[in-house]
Image 1: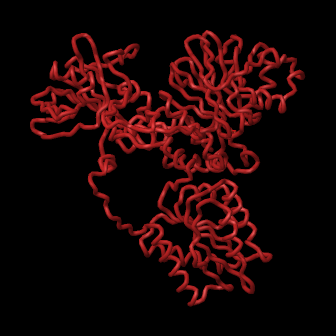
Image 2: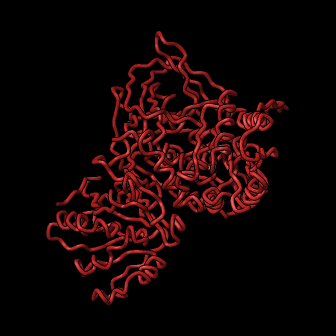
Length: 616
Ligand code: FEO
């Protein structure tokens, strides 16, 4: 019987979950199963995005047949050739012989390595449609744009963006191990408590080696106006996208997620385990709270890899075995190296009743990895832990604790005034809207401050070059929408990167209005305020308005966007491999390609001055 679910108007989940699978890719244990997500779009044309693993074909075809309800399937977009998503393509062409297979050149080439389509009486050469980066496919109301995602997770992988529903069909990216339990969306479950560990284990083991390529995809995604992310595995994302994207930013840049200690040990008769326990207890006594211990003999390496991505500090303790590293420990360490893990501190404990060698051999593995700092004091045991070993373990705990929370005392550079200081102020980001006669306008500001509670008054500084400034000067009223962390870069582009004097920033946008008749943002803001100016003062480049609040309402419980969050998670990072000379605006990323930057230069996009530029 079919098991479909509505994703958005005319867009359906047609996938299935598998709880019988023991090992995903015949490698990774999936005790909670796994879901294979496929999506069907019903428009003037019918479009399937990917298929599913062979194991769940029956339900998938029932889903498809039910929703198509007699219609032909016109297109299947293949975002990923790996058989957990493409295994059904041969049979699909048998069932829907008119279907056109859409993929990039490598996708189409690789598909023919998996299928001989002549066996399915399918004229592949005539019916395959080749697409490349930025190409679009219009199927009625819905418009698909193709975004290449090389090595996330295979070389042909791509994502597909549907602009009208603002959905990124992200292929393996943003996927998660675990069968779906009825709830389709991440915001319907306690994702951080129940799913994050599996999401981390999925990303780090499947794609973790290819951090640079994942970063490239994240950069592309950050320039899209995103309302939803639909991956090929696990829950779909329609809220708090920034939170999950931040996890991906950390994992793909090999930045520790937590200030935490992973202790993995290999012990035959308990001596090495005893040493690891003593070290853990010593760390705890020194105030370290996030410590996770694993016996590598009964922990799958994929768990060690995932925890190594999460934790900032590692301890590996291994007995010597056949004059080498204990077999399960060696497997785990080689797996870490294979996943390109970087930027960590490591402490080592070795054991060996007559000739301990594991310490040196483990150190050799870490020497081949990037930016791994191995503490000098390897603790070397011979069989059981002796009193003298305990002192060495205490010393190692001291060093590790110090590395975990190093006391830092720095001199402030104060001459004459460091511009960077002002980026450390914890601003929020706000959409400021006003109106002049029949015309609405808005801009982005970071200068809202509450002044008094009774009466409720705020101040806001607005650049005089902004059209919104002229409107407030004329009318004395404005709205401020407090942007939240799910606001994509496109929102900042709309409000901030062109002048309302030349364009209508709200053309084609369904807007909400407050009692004063002004627009507020009901999608990407968590609250809004209406202000009536009671005083204004000229400060050269800016006017500071003091206003009494006439209306204020909460819209959503999504956390507010801060300046720091915007820079870390929303503003696109410079494209990898693109080398330009000149100056870059730290606010919006505009690049002024010149050897010099005039002191009175104003960013043509966001209107910030030369002080907000830095040399590339
Ligand atoms: Fe879910 Fe790379 O396949």
